Length: 168
Image 1 (cartoon, rainbow, N blue to C red):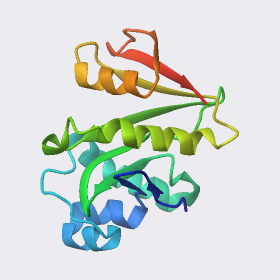
Image 2: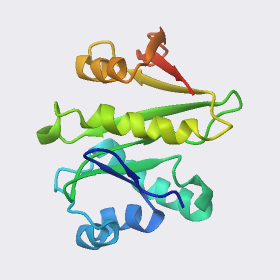
Image 3: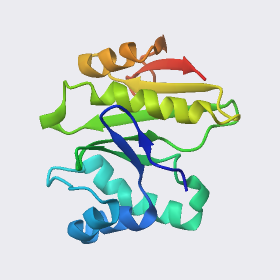
């Protein structure tokens, strides 16, 4: 199991299968397992729908932990999530994504967490490139990607998303 990552202000916690499952069943128990307070607004619906799938995936293959969901904790409170869309592909690419709770946006948490996770992934020899995708009108996400040194490399893709890359 990967260790928590600690930045200047955040602790990034890899979301284990039991915690992912508990979030949909018993939030208080999930908070106890994670050791942080979980706001009622978290997670947003897209992640909420994915949690049971993710929990089974990590339960079936514990080596998936780290290549999926991590939570961002600030002063004992979950302020967002970040992670990868799975293990690196055959070309060594891994895609990163993130979401910060509305009340905590604009404080620099997304770039701080992204840089820590990129550093973690870059330490793996099978990772050669980290990519991210965002909508062209998502100015906040574009600023985050620029702050962490990613460069636009294409898009919009089939889903209407711009593609950004950082080299490990």
